[in-house]
Amino acid sequence: MSDTGAIKSQVFDAIVQLIDDKSINITDNTPLIGDGSLLDSMKLVELCLSLEDKALERGFEFDWTSDAAMSKSRSMFRTAGSLAAEFINQMEATK
Amino acid sequence: MIVVTGASKGLGRAICDRLTSKNLPVFGIARRIEGISFPCMSCDVSSYEDVKAVAQHFKKDKVRIDALINAAGIASMNLAVTTPPAVSRNIVHTNLLGTIYCCQLIAPLMLRNKAGSIINFSTIAVALGLKGESIYAASKAGVEGFTRAFAREMADFNVNVNCIAPGPIDTSLLKGITSEQIGRIVSQQIIPKQFTPDAVSDVVELLLDERSRSLSGQVLHIGGV
Image (tube, rainbow over all chains, first blue to last red):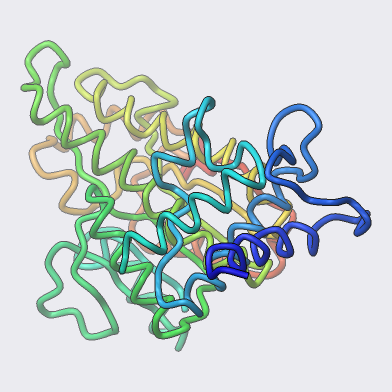
């Protein structure tokens, strides 16, 4: 698995850790906010803290208050895939 | 660690002195930190980047944050129509955005522990709608609204958020206000006397005490209003 693939898998694993039904298959299109989302606001913050820790292990700071967090149309929290993509973007931006 | 903004003077300094006198660990934040004898860091709370640097410092050193006291604030007594835009911006940036930035960036350190207390500062000028303080009151009304909503957001994490709204306390913030003006404001309090920074520090201690865990999203008026 490529490094970005492994990181995406880590992000998806972090989501699974926070949901009750562990059998749910997390995909790029799994919504994190809005209709059908798996996480309430508390779990979303816990996910951010978990990703912050994973980022530190990889030597960068995960900024969950960035502009990318806010826009409804392109919020990083829109889907599991968009969150993983933003996480990877921020990691690559620090290289 | 208890983080106090506006730690170099006024209410912030009085609160720091009270807490350190009780051997509580205090970390002060202020624009100017010369002469501060407890751990501190220079920071302009109206600068998101400055506040972020403080939060990064805590993260890097794995400092456990138990409380945040947002005492940094500025005032300018003026009619709204005669207040220059730069002054209006400065008041809102420091009082409202400064409080929001500190909460946004330092609260996450408390969320990890699922415990903590945040104390913001408003003013009697909000409740009384004091003439000549409209912009200052607007910035602090924002702090009150933010406190009530943020308290709900933090409740799941066992972090309490409250607001203290003093009347005219004898600090440098009152310079330029005559004793007659102070007397008029004080006379509108439920307890019509001018309180000292000690009274504010008493309420801070109360809100930091485990026995006040049932209080969140509240605005506590020193002197009553």
